[in-house]
Length: 338
Image (cartoon, rainbow, N blue to C red; front, side, top):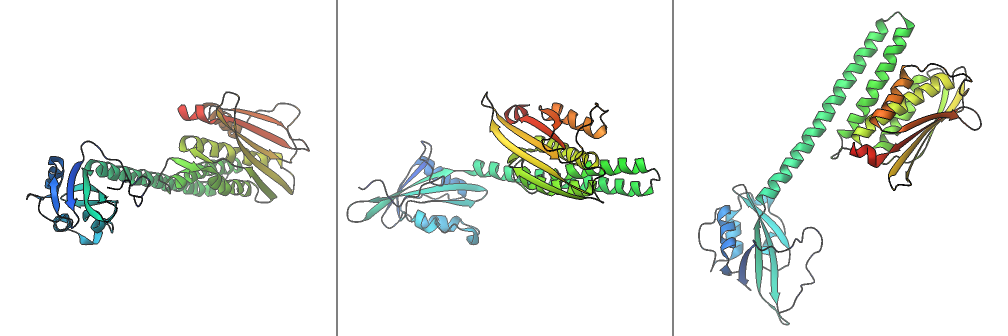
C-alpha cells in the first residue's frame, strides 16, 4: 500500500508506536479482523469482556462510553480507521489511547490498523501535577493574605504610637512585609515557581517612591529587562530594590522638592559563560557623604540579602552628574544552584 499517510498530524499528539501497544486490524467497514493479546487486554480493562473479532470497533467503543458529552470529536474517525489521528477513551477509571493507521493502495482504503495503549497512569500523574500546582497557588495566595493582614496590623499599631521614630519604624516594617506579599501574589497567579519580575517591579518601584516621598514630586524611570526569576531570588531582590529606592528618596533627595530615581536591569553573559544580572538604582540627589557614615537597618538588610540570599555583590558610587548610584551584580546560574 501507500506509506506514509500525508494527512498524519505532526507534533506531540502524534506519538510513536511501542512494542507493548495492542494491535487491532480492521477491514474497510471498521470490523475487527484480528486483535492482539495486548489489544484484547486493553479493552478488557475498559470493561469489554467479549471477543473483539468480527465486531465493529466503533460499536464496541460507543457501548463503553458512559458520558457521551465528553467524547473527543476525532473518536469516530479513529475507531473506523478513516483518518491517521489519535484519540482517547475513558471508562471505569481507565484511559485508553487509540491511534489509527489507514491502509490504502493506489485506488482506495482497504482497511486500517489501530494501536491501543493504556495511559491511565500517565493521566493520573498529570492530574496529580495539576492538583499540586493548584495547592501551591493556594498556599501562595494564603501567605499573601496573611502578610497583608500583618501589614494592616502594623499600620493600626503605628497610628497608636506617639513617638515619631516608632511610627517610622513600623511604617518601614509595613513596606517590607507588603513587598514580600507582592511576590506571593504574583506566584499565586501562575503555574510555575518563576516570577515575571518586570511586571512585579513596575508596580512596586513607583509605589515605593510614592510612599517614601508623600511631600515630594519624585519621578521614577525604569530601563532594561529583568525577565523571569525564580521565587527564591525574586523575594530578596524585591526587598533590596524596595530598600534602595526608599533610601534614595529619604536620604538622597532629602530637602529637595523634586527629583528622579532610576532603576536599570541588564542580563548578560559573564566571562565564564554564566548568566549575570546587573541592577542599578540611581538618584540625582545630594550624593554620598565625604565621610563614611553608619549604616541604618535598611542598608544592613540590603547588604545581608545581597551577600547571603542572592550570592552577589553591591557597590555604592557617585553618579556622574550628581547623586548616588548603587550597583548590584548577581550570578543567576550560581544563585539557582544554591
